[in-house]
Amino acid sequence: MPYKLGITTALDLANASPRAIRDQFSVVLERTVRELNGESCIELEEIPPIKKQIVCSRSFGVKVTHFELLREAVCEYATRATEKLRKEQQQAKVLTVFIRTSPFKDNEPQYSNSASGELLIPSCDTRDFIELANHLLKRIWKDGFRYAKAGVMLSDFYDPGMFQPGLFDDVSTRSNSQQLMSVLDTINQSGAGKVFFAGQGTKKDWSMKREHLSPAYTTRWDQLPRVK
Image (tube, rainbow, N blue to C red; front, side):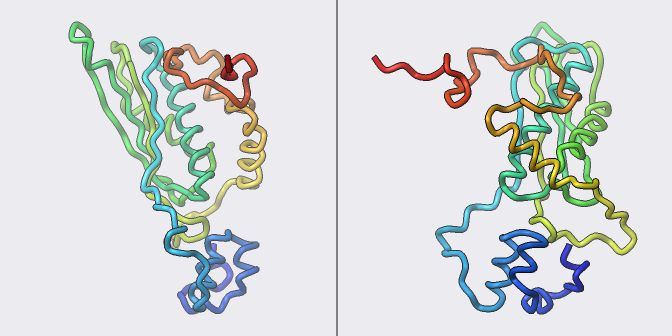
């Protein structure tokens, strides 16, 4: 974080070495340093819109009635959302978990709920959000319902290194978090789910309806489009 280098004001940041800032944090923060010194680094049309949230949710292929299956689904969605977060080179502080039954089944008991939780400091470590997702799901889970859909939403985004914690906050982070997440993303580039967390489960009996699944053109020979 910049304050660890003695950077507490915009002037301190402007006087910092761009290369050192890039090595310690990110190219995004390096560009900020250069912009503060009057160097135009990004054309206006090149600036992508800043995402305010990332949502990952699916309707289940079968109705879910057991907590463990719903927990696996929520962990899966938290994993996918956090992968997208890292691709955006962002960190998030708030996670929302939501679950619901089918609104089209009038003859079945209806229930929907959501819960939000906040990390002490922003993160893009999947483990942080899986842990928080499990805690939130326990708060809103109710027995006796046939759940049709669940999902997660990440919000309250920060550029890496830009969050300023409180004076007495415990800002300790997981050891080698960035390196581990980078390795996982690299391995999974050739096919989602090659390496996964135990909380995601292995059978995925809750998974989405197969007729709604997008073809895996880049990883499955049998799903390549045929030209006649």
